[in-house]
Amino acid sequence: MTTTSRPLCTLCFESVSDYRINLDLLVDALSRAPKDALILAHEVCLTGFDYDQFEEAADFGAEALKELCLHVSDQILVFTLIEQRNGLYYNVAKVITHNRVVHEQAKAMLFTLGSEERHFAPGTQSDIAIFEIDGIKLGILICFELRFKTLWKQLEGADIILIPARWGHTRAHHFRILTTALAIMNQCYLLCADGANADATALSGIIDPFGEEQRNEGLLLTAAFEPKKIAAMRRYINVGIANEP
Image (tube, rainbow, N blue to C red):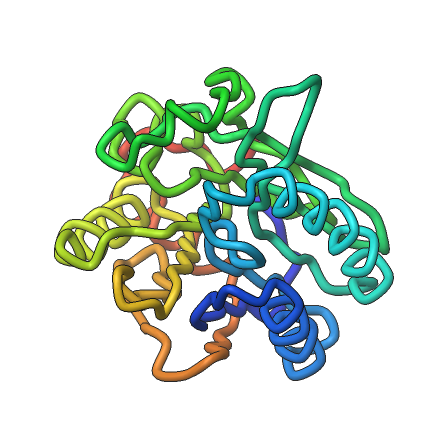
């Protein structure tokens, strides 16, 4: 179990059609967050699912990634973007810290109600796994992946699970319940971020291992990461999740 502590931040903002405005807003949010924070932004926050301009969205994402690497030093930033690889398009989670990408994973479970399979190639399910930064064990599920219980098991033992999403507002109740349940089930912190667009839930938030939740009331929500809470919950109700690897 890590003893490393750092602030946790979730963002909640509307992605607009002007990609540059979205990037500027994200950079501004980084400047407002604590200098050592772990920060989560929502799924495809820079471009949205701009299916009519996929090539332009991918090109912008590649340039934006370079710019964001310049801004993110001691912070950790997690978000997803549209990326082209060998003529195919993927929805890829990127983790930036120390001015470079240190982890990435493509969305494996595509949302058929949104016709994602017509536009994206799927990532590999086995890539959904715990990774470590500065002694903190992290895991990522991208939006629809939150609904798969087998993936919850793959991230068992994580200190923090991150959910970048663009979740439909008509299913907001599901998003709130599932994000809280995952934090309780895996006895860990959970950060979730959704956009503030009319078709999204705006239910970004931070949930602790006891299931206590805070949800964004504005652009930026900040809470403390307390590793002792993870150990305390896992001792209090032992469901077989080890505190040590």
